[in-house]
Length: 155
Image 1 (cartoon, rainbow, N blue to C red):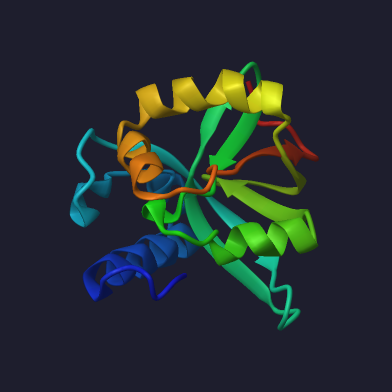
Image 2 (image 1 turned 120 degrees about the vertical axis):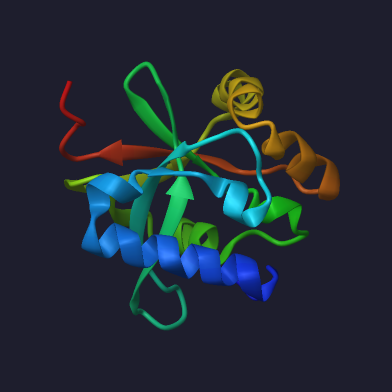
């Protein structure tokens, strides 16, 4: 998590992460209205990644998007000027573990190509309008990643 967010947002993130650890199927859908993002429940996954400096196993709960059987995540960090730590960790070591509800699998993260970014980004912003605001807050291009799951999601 990041100290770029207000304490109440950090608390909501921590509570959602704890719910994912105790009841992953319930945590898969989360309503971000508790952090001021309207629009209703969104699909979330639990991402385990390795700290690039610490070498420790870390975890982050993230909204995810699906298209054509692929899973993608957005490194928007609420429009902060810097990339989220989980993203920097995946750049350093793309191997990770992903929980989508009770479906758990090893995965590899990869940055989208420019063509993939151009395809996914408008659809992601339409699905989660808060991303439009995040994009306006920052001068950096918001990275998008594909998570290549070792065990695909059940149909």
